[in-house]
Length: 144
Image (cartoon, rainbow, N blue to C red):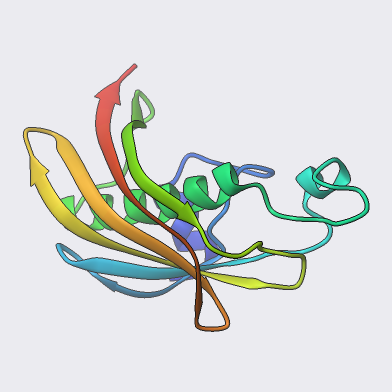
């Protein structure tokens, strides 16, 4: 899935769109996506000027965006203008290694459970095959 297709499933836009490509998706099961991390990212100006590191919260956000695509594909729908996909919980977050400019962040999410409008995912981010972040995310779709 290229960026044009991704834009149909996520309302995010620059500088907050954090999924560049979907490499693999199996609706109802899991997704593998990627984020190319470049020195041009606006957050690197202040995080940190002498040692640029991608903020952990943005790695989690990228994982959530990949998870949202998975959910919409699983439901065989696209987001509506009056809907927002919210976080409702983040558990067991672990940051194992820093993510730097030039890294290709591989985002993996699998559905753990979906019931009564709540989605739970097991997520992990990798760089060069090495785990950099893992967590369990919970999200829900709501009208605004």
